[in-house]
Every structure is written in C-alpha cells, then in structure tokens.
Length: 375
Image 1 (cartoon, rainbow, N blue to C red):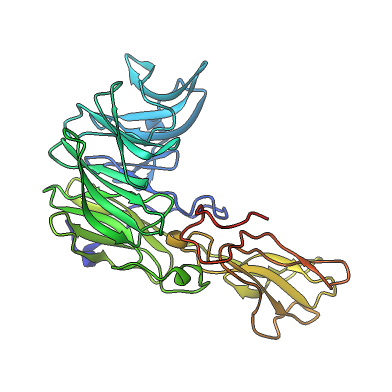
Image 2: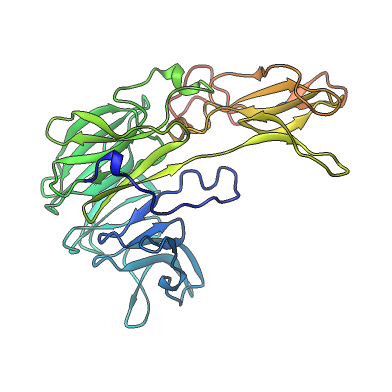
C-alpha cells in the first residue's frame, strides 16, 4: 500500500448539484484500471469517463458493480425485468440477485455477498442464486470479502450511533467483534481489506466514540479520514488524515493500492442585482437563502458538510444586510437545536417565521435515528 505522502489524484469531478452527489463513492476494479462512480464508468489510466464500457440493451441503468471476473454487471431494467444483468452471449442476462442488493464477488469469483436495503439486519453470502442470510447485530453499513473467501468483515451501526467492525465466518455463521465503538458514517460505510487479510480500512471521524452533543455542532472538527484497523487486535490509526475541507471516505483496495473518495462541498449565499451586475457575497458556507420582507436580513441554513453527522449539524441563521445586500453584522443563530433545522421563512410583516425541522428533544445518533420529528 502506498503511504499518504505518495497519494495522487486519479480523477476529479465538479457536479453542479446540491447534496445529491456528496456521498457518491468510487469503486475500483480489481486490476485498478476502471472505477464505478455513480452510474458512470471511469477509465483511471486516462482520467476520463468511459461511456463505451456501458453495454447496451437496458431501457434504464441505475447502478453498476464488478462481477466474478472483474467484468461489468449493471442494475437496470429490460422489458418487464428489473435487477442485476450481465452481458452473456452478447445480450443482457438477468442474474439471480435481488434488485436492492449491493453485490461483491468473492476473490475466486465462486460466490457472491451482498447487503439489502430491505433487510438491513443481515448480510447475504453464498453461491449465486443460493446465498444464505447471516443475521448481524445492528444495521449493516458496509462489508468486504477476506482473501480466504470463507469470511467477511462487516461494519454495522449500533443504536447508540457508533459502529462495530466484525469478522463473519461463513461456514459457522459466527461473528467475532474486531473493533467496537467506531466513529463511522451512519448511512453507509464501505470497508476494504488489505491483500494479506490482516488489516481493514474504514472511514472514521476519530479513533474513539464522539460525545452525542458533538454530532449536532454546526462547526466541529469531525471530518472523515481513512483508518487502518488491525483485524487481530482492533487497534487503529489514520493512514489518510482527515482533509481540511470535506471528507475522505469509501476506501477501496485494488491492484496493491488504497483508493478513497474525497468530497468537498462549496456553498455561499449571494445577492444579484435584478438589473444585472456584480454578484455580491453575503455569507460563505450558507445555503437556501431567504429574505426578510423589509430586505434588511437574509436567512439561510448553515453547518459543515460532514458525512459522519449527515445534516443533523445544520441550523437556521440570519445576517443583517444594508440596502445593497451587504452584510453589516455577524451571523445570528435563529433556529437551533438537536438534529436538522432549516432557514427561517418570514411572514409578510416579518413578525413570525416558519421553518422545516427534524427537531429532537435530546441528541440523536444519526439522521435516521428515532426520537426526532419531520415538520
């Protein structure tokens, strides 16, 4: 594995979207030549999208994975069938996999493992078409094959918000905890394994468990870095330090190299003259702006983009502006609390505000955790 100081960027993209692409991860083919990024196939040698690699025959393509021999398998629709397809004999062939599966083939290609959106308390593994369900303590957020092909490493979210990394022996069905209390992403958290099978790689915001309150702070030093976990002892340390901006996540091991995705979001509230002219910055890091009816205050959502605390650190704030839209004061936190809060929307006379919120009375562990509203 290369050390962090020898890291190099192999592909970059700047989509003009809001939150939709932030957590999009790259999955690299075993030979290190190709990567799947969202629905696209990337040629990592040439640093470009390889549209020619997506074979025809599907009326809709929703996703992709690398098959038993490193070939491309596609999630999509053909006629009345929706699911995972391979290109066998020159035409798409439906595989015996659930449409909500996230398949990974074993190192020798003889078996497949997958998690399912509709069965988050289990991981499935076995021959294609005859995979067995293995119950997991918690919500499965990531998994990977070990080189022996007879076991998996599985990372699962626990009710308190931390995650547990375990080794699952497929013959016995026995899971052995490797590392508990991991500060990992709560929605999905890909895991990778070194070629020697002795180390795993996961994205963490720190070496230990966070305080519940820290998850809700709009600005906190909780960006994700890539950690190496010793599968024998559970000891872990950062091999890719958390970046100054954004998150490093979704580790992937291929062809002797460690790959990861680095996501950064740029957002600012600005004012634009209706007659045209210079765009004026109001507040960096602000989103979804709103005007107070008298034009002397601008509201917005603020808070770091942190995949580990996705959206539960967002609050609603405002800043005073002059008649030209220039900020003339500091940020006012207006709508704050546990979980997600959005920008104020003022009543016509400016005496009341309405806002969207997932307010919780006490700290919650994640966006989907129980105990919050959706108002």
